[in-house]
Length: 444
Image 1 (spheres, one colour):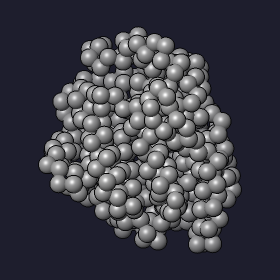
Image 2: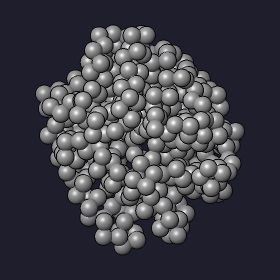
Image 3: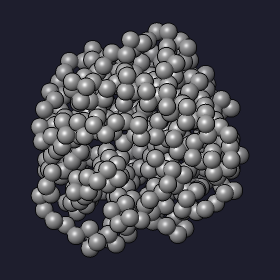
Image 4: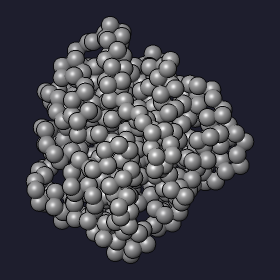
């Protein structure tokens, strides 16, 4: 991989950091919940459409805030604490927290809440869905930059309860891997690898896909999001390679956090990670295709569609180096798939469903900065320094060209989706890693 132009990141860093801080400040919300008898604060991903506190967005904000330093670290602590303020006694934490605007952005989002909430649907509540569990890494980052043992001791039991819930209720097949029950739990809404599962033809998204995907939520809603009933009907049952990569990575981090406080449960989370990793290699990896595929149903059928998550698992400790190299060379560094002018597109460019332009059907072509951020540190650690640099420089170029947008055209760099979108702020963490400032042991 060769950069198409040279940009001096150092010249842009101050301007970028100032802009990132301004966006996070403008999107910051705080208040007090009488219902939960709790103060809350969070950062909206954008001012308009994404008005609520989202699970993995809150984790991204932790990484960004801690990189900005100073009082922003205090803000990171407060936002992370708010993420667990509505945690259920079972350990469950929903993917959307409706703190102050209780009505969802779209009427169909009602189906992502439990009907037994009753009148609470019109009060502060959380959704019934989950999102990729980045919370252990987020807590580790807060702990390492603040050195606040009291905060770690406060939040660690909550994070443990959440991972215990995942292992108890979403390891449907006792193989260590977590099952998602709707496309919207992956964090990558409308991801093309799910199309075969809902009998949508291999083509660009349209209103028929909308109906099919929303129907998945509606059926879960009718079953009151009861995991036993959902597992029995097997309507939408996916072990997503990206979700489970983050799960395994965070189990390792959770074990490290337990060690910090001499908690013997560290061994339990290491064993859970080992079990899930073995199943990932056995069930998801296809040696002939050099890809880690999402798998579906109790039979673990491979969904052979190339999205960036086919190479996400290479970041995990325990994946053999020869697999790492084979997967990256075959896919990430392939100009026919993911090596575009502005990487990493959210679907292989040679896929019939690929659409690089603005659409309500997300994660089916455009470049999302989070994919670059996720792969960047691994590439640095493994000696792919030039390739890692391309990812961060591409983001700087995107920001300079189109501003802080939700996603971008991978060929032209044109910005799409929400404006002043916070995820683009992850570039400050990548810049810090390039300069050797972000080297948090145990973060994964």
